[in-house]
Image 1 (cartoon, rainbow, N blue to C red):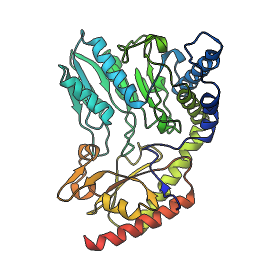
Image 2 (cartoon, rainbow, N blue to C red; image 1 turned 90 degrees about the vertical axis):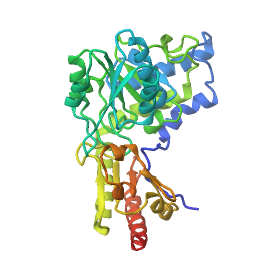
Image 3 (cartoon, one colour; image 1 turned 135 degrees about the vertical axis):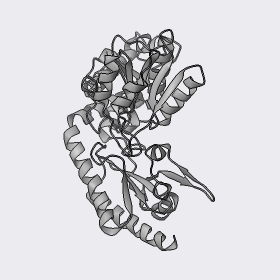
Image 4 (tube, helix red, strand yellow; image 1 turned 120 degrees about the horizontal axis):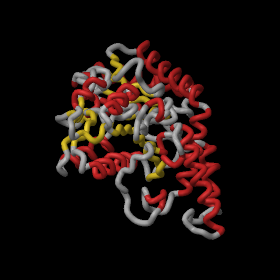
Length: 381
């Protein structure tokens, strides 16, 4: 059976063929432990350090400031829990937003139940955080601010450079979850002004189960995973050499072709959106029209249910829903709720996200399939 057209690159990405080729030796022959002092550990250790340099290059930081992790979720946990525990003697207040991924939202909730105070900032109808609101939320006890770089559902890109200025002026560390932005838009930590930044391998055409955390020197979050002294004593556990090599290779590829890749994704995203608008009425774009990831379109189809649309298109198009519709209830995304999207729109929300393997022909087919499905479902509403 022919596979559906894949338009869920924000969910996960396929492996880049160059990434697979780079990883293959560490699956087949270079099985050594990078911590081993003998011959078998030499190439794996060199490979890990090369990958560290490749990740540092896309972030514009020192390789010494890169910690390898098991993924974006661990990176977020390490950054937030590690800084909260390290600085608890100075204060117990953390600022984040109502717009975050659960890998940040739930960590902050855990800290709130553990004696910390957490302020959740609201966002505009476009999903943007006002730097002025960040400053207004700061207290004498504030020790950390965590604001995502780009939202995974609607693609809104936050004004991190402005937020970081506020954080620096008050001497507060700033963390950002950049799982969705690395490889899609520039993620220069010097320009963004962030102190900690989380990377997820499977969002940038590398494997699942690998990620990285940038920590600006001399910050030193408390060790997250206890054990031996890997990662210079900052994260215990034998390194996932194959995954780390894949992440490093993926970051190098992304860095070299970023401008061209951004332009192509934006073209395909807009072609999809405009094509659907040419066929259908009552479509709403969620998030910022301008400050948005070039590959992401969160579209709401008024008075329809996202699950029903996906059922209609599922054999031909793979996308994700912004709402879970059940027999008597509609469970809306917290992101759409935070932006104040009306229920009659929010319940019919689909996220389309394109990537480097997406073709024009696939976009044109997706337009036809989705439009036909919506037209079929609307008369019954």
